[in-house]
Every structure is written in C-alpha cells, then in structure tokens.
Image 1 (tube, helix red, strand yellow):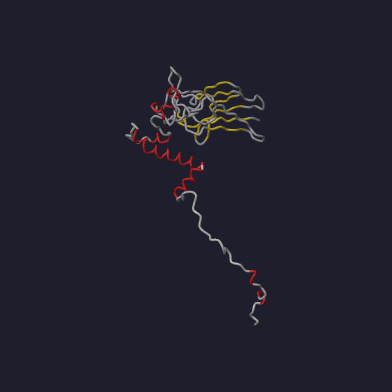
Image 2: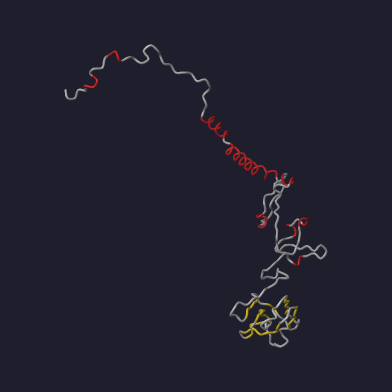
Length: 247
C-alpha cells in the first residue's frame, strides 16, 4: 500500500470525456499545386536582387569569353610582352569607345632624341611609335628635382648648418673628359650669399684620392671651367663636386 498513489483515488468518472467523440478529423487538401525543390530555389533566387545582378554579369562575361574570340579577326602571331599590360580589345565595342585596347599614360619622361623639330613633340622612353596614338600625344615641361639626365633646368640649394664649415654636392656617376675635344664644365649659380666669405668651389676627381679645385665662384652667374687648364694630367673620367664654404 505504500506505493499506492492516493492523489487520484477520489476523481469521479463524470469528470472524464472522450475527445472528438462525435466528430471525425480528415486531412485538408492543398489549395495550390505542390512546389518542387528546384522551383522553390529559383523563386528565392529571383527575389534576391544582389544574386540576380551578379549572375547576369557573370553570365555576360562567360558568353563574351566564348564568342568574342570566335568572331575576332585579330590573331597573335608572336608574343608581345608589353601588350599584356593593355586592357582588352573587343570587336564592335571598340567602335563606341569601350574596351578599345588602349590606356592613357600621364607624366611620362620624354626621350630628347625623339623630339620632332617641326612639331616639338617627343616620344616617351622605351616606347615604340607604332604603339602610340600620335593624335593624343602632348608634351610639356614640368618641375623636376631628380638626379638624372632627364631633368633640365633643375636647381640645387646648398645651406650650411650651424657649426659646419662647408657642404658638398657630388655627382653619383662617372663623367668622361677629353682634352682633345676641349671638355668644359659649366656651372650656373642663381644666388650666393655675400656674407661670411661665402664661396663655391668647383672640384673634380678623384686624383690620387683627392678632389682638385678647378674653379672658384663668389658671385651669381654662369661660369665655364676647363679641367685641363691647371691640371694637364687630369684623368679621362671622373666625378664633379661642388663645395660650398663659409666662415
């Protein structure tokens, strides 16, 4: 009797009734046709505008990659490595300025040897004329502070810090000199301080490990120096340096 559950002993039978005693339950028929997995996936895909746009673009690229080479009249007979950096050239689209295989280049240094005396136009370095649309070629002069032969009319400004007696600018490359052809060194000074015994020494070398002075400048102007004038044993090649001194 210890296991008898006395909690439900006094429940009257009238408190119980059959569920759905007088009714029957039937399955209702679908009002619409059933949708398969593929159709449901396509409906969801069509509602996603982002996926739809991306798929259209991808499909267009795939079709272009298939049919454009078929209809193209251009064939590559040899490898042109420089052309690999150009954008694609697509027939029919190039007629309206889209995918015409050209690229605009700006601020390209000009090779002085290619300048036409009649037009004044020159070609960029390491570029063949056949690869340039000459109607778009335009040359101009711009500011330049680089240490190379492409810079013309540049200017070096030399200043001496406190507790310093001089400053030096020296060429990085070796220059060729010839006594037979009367090689000259031309220096153009725009400004030089007239205080504290300021002077600019034009030196060349190295000769026996030292740079020899071939000229001295104390005032602005253009100066021409002969490296062989006081140095008949001046070597056939060397470097130029400008030494600015001040007390």
